[in-house]
Image 1 (cartoon, chains in turn brown, purple):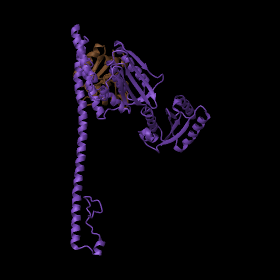
Image 2 (image 1 turned 90 degrees about the vertical axis):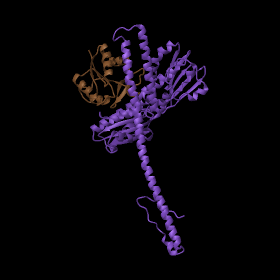
Image 3 (image 1 turned 180 degrees about the vertical axis):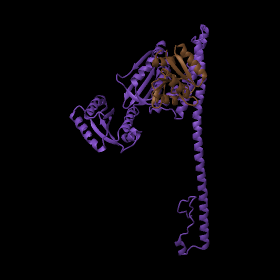
Image 4 (image 1 turned 30 degrees about the vertical axis):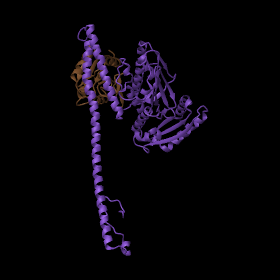
Length: 126
Length: 426
């Protein structure tokens, strides 16, 4: 069973995403900001990270920068799940978020669960 | 009236100077002199006061400007925050409804499910309105950021069109797609350009009851011209000028159930213009509409420069010195594709060392020679010229430019700036 780390400061979102992913047979671990997300990622080496952007203490973008510069975590794919900006417009395809010279897939909030699931499936299988 | 001979600054106010020769000539009476001195003093006082005034005004302006900038920033933050603050609860509402509707907590009767799904559709609509409003705000404040990269427009359009196929079929319309057989590349923000196509396609389908939707793109000089044509109800002549205005929903009084935000065309226009292109419409009521927009190909920039940048950066890290030769290859445009492969092959044959690197883009070729001084690269240039001359097929004219590290620049940005022509820098 694949493990997914969900990082979001809103408990309701964490609960809902966890619920949805577990219903689709993923194991889910959670964190409530960038700092905690990095710790969880380093400790548990999840197969994928679902990352919010705007969070207190450390933003999702900052956290991804750190994760991508750490040899232990740099291979872990990241999908942003964010309410920030229109770069993540809910179109036919997932949007993109630009962090440190690289594009990452991004799904805008409010999200369609089938988009989140298909993006995850594309990156780690199920 | 006599004027002060120098501009007056508050710091050094010149003392009134009475021209000596006029005293010597002795034609001015004492009273006249006193009067003139007083007058000059009065003028100087006035000047000093107005100068102080200007200085104060300037200070005020600097302060106001800083305040305005801060206000502008706060407004942007506010717009972004409001969007964020609305989207977060919306996503909680949406996903909660969605999980109930999907039966994650038990089976849902069909009647209930219908209502839940109706809620979902409207949450999505609300989210789209917020996104559109935010886009318009950004476009109007010139804050919409483009992330450009080299994109093959032919396959981009194919992808967009394939996403609409079922929708078009469901309405009993025909979908015609006229694309060139070859790649048509342009340096664009893929997501934003897709947004334009999606907006125009959605409109075309929305307002067409029978007939077809036709999409085509073609290369024209250094532009890509895109057309989205329909055989729909068309637009009245008097409505055409208003079409790209905000919240202008021309079709609304027709009473059909179209639901848009009235911002799609405003956003499309903004995106096209940010790319340096133009958008226009031709329409006849009852016959249909054709929207046309252009996007400059701008192929020299972005992708290649990014590539060149990383090549230069790693060269700076690895070598104490190196030289970059830039060749501007003069080939007629229709022969460019055929010639560039040949030229690339010939040039690579002239480079004997493994560390030498070639970055090519259309007419521009950058050759990186690690460890080579500026003066020493002439050998390589001569070799390349000879090689190209020997090949009758390579009908090229070379224009050579040389830039060296560390002589011409210490960072990759400085070096690139030196390598680019003025029009490329723009």
